[in-house]
Length: 83
View 1: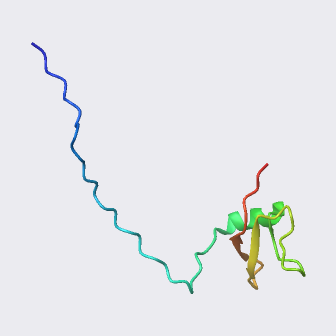
View 2: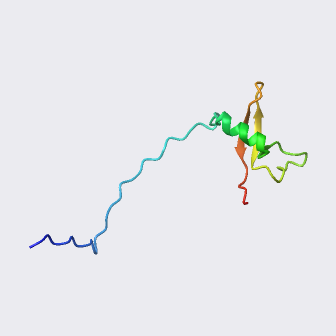
View 3: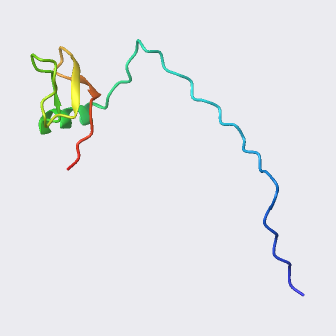
C-alpha cells in the first residue's frame, strides 16, 4: 500500500514568525542616489527644480533637492508617470 496523503490543517491556527523591523535611517542623512540614475533623469527631463509657484513641471517625476559643485544632483521622487 502507498503512503497516505497528508490531511490539511483544518481548525488549527498556524502561528507566523514575527518579522523584525529594519533599523530606521537617520533623517539627517539622505540616502545617496545612484549617480547614473540621477544623470539619466536629468537627461530625459524627468528631474527638475520647482518653478516660481512651487510646482513641478508636468513631464518631471523627481524634484532636484540639491545641486552639488561637481555637477551632480540629489533628487526626490515627487510623483509617478502614467503613460
